[in-house]
Length: 235
Image (cartoon, rainbow, N blue to C red):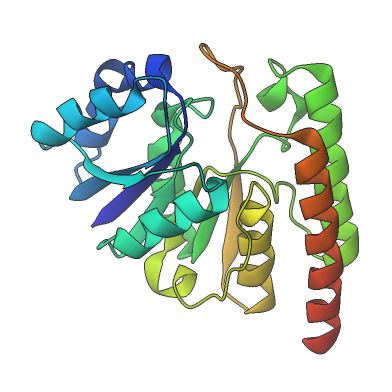
């Protein structure tokens, strides 16, 4: 079974797209699945829509009474998952659910423990993203490659398929957006098999990004220093 984990904070308009843009894709996979949505303290009406989906048994809903951050939202979803595989996806659907079958196909072909969708394998896969955001993401990913010595193109991507037993064995400390980079680095450091596929990243259709540039820059820098120490301890 595949557990699809979606963290959500104030994404009412994008959640309303799920019946058209997400549910049919999941049902067409031919796999048993559960869809876990973690509402991280939304106050824009997202919870009302999610509760309707929960009543119709289309999702399993976890609610944080206050906003606790992307990392904690993902951890709540991971802990509640029952699948052998866990797939993480953003609520804004900037990584289109149409790409999910390609993650699954790659895992079956390579027997990987983690398959990551990367918009940085070929420039065209992030062509819709604003230039300054592309530049910041490339800088962050270069910094992680340099610090960890790991040939991985997209540490910061959320769009991934994980072997549940491997993911749940990690001592992940991050609570913010940097969690995806920490998970990717730990999979490499622990010797799990990792692969990447090209995945298109689109601009969000509705709402605004919740990323706080100063806070996330500080969190990424602290994580980079922590991972550098960890790499030296595990040559």
